[in-house]
Image 1: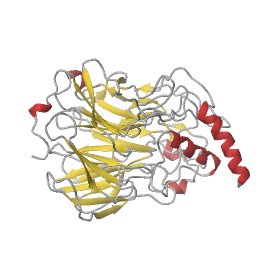
Image 2: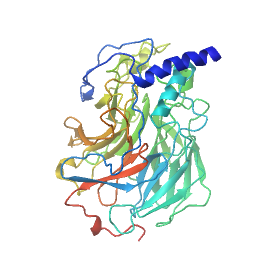
Image 3: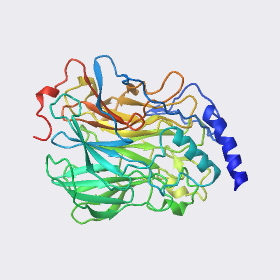
Image 4: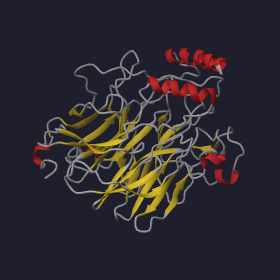
Length: 448
């Protein structure tokens, strides 16, 4: 055991200071037809994380000309996900992996854990939801209140009528909600178990209600990078579930999605879209993370294939019958960008260019050189389909010497139509609005 520890330390220390593995100066893994090169392999996985550094006083990320970025709320504890209530209050899930979380077995799993700690992950989970309220409509949260505590790595939130649903890592919970309340003290009701267990590799569970309020869609990530824990460990994982509110019945909606996080309704087509993290250790330029319209009953390849029917030969045994059914996603978001947050712009505050398009929170690569992600991108849509290359919308989270002063995760729209971005390294929620056309003052303060 001591020898193994020394060996692991001898590996992780060099990795902390330089990348190991293939290098590339370009990434063609974007768009409706991304480049899918031949896979690469190396004895030691590429590790090129951006170590966390405290942001300097007065820092704000960079938005396009004509937009103003302000700190909607600061001093948070690992804010991951956002949800805007109808009265304008904003809920923030302060969360990280549960104690029983396993990033992967063996030496490489241990190495990854150490590196992720340098990236600001691996902190004890706050296990709570905080309510942010902009009392005077200024675009800055005047108050922060612990809205719900004692949770278990919470993530997704959805309000249906007067019932608030929260997705813990292992259960879907329901709470009674009263408009304007700043704290829920009643015990929640568990309405469904969610896959977790001793591995629980991808622990986040997001939820989204349909327009009828009769169903919730629930993301469940895989239990591995690419099936290395065995196919049996993927039972019930790597999918989106459909939950019937009235009956409590849960069924698979779409499968073979390695790690879906963001869920959103595209306003023009009405289609359900998701943002998905794909697998690692196949080289700098594989596999692109993506977003896609989700088809009921569809299979998207994991673990047997990626980006449609490109077979991952590491997975044994293979399933040719499933690979033959694998659907290629609609739009690639870059290799190893860790694209998590997803929201479509369906408001009028922003210029017409943004209407119907998608904002994507990219948490940032840990295993690519040069680094990718660490920003929020915008993808234009026309007639319900992507129509252009991703545009940098909120960036500047990486310093010139390669440190991360922030990492975007969840994205949401506030009551005025501004974009909110959860930053789990900067421990803040950023707000982006047009510089000379912020209609905050025209909206009634939250809680009224």
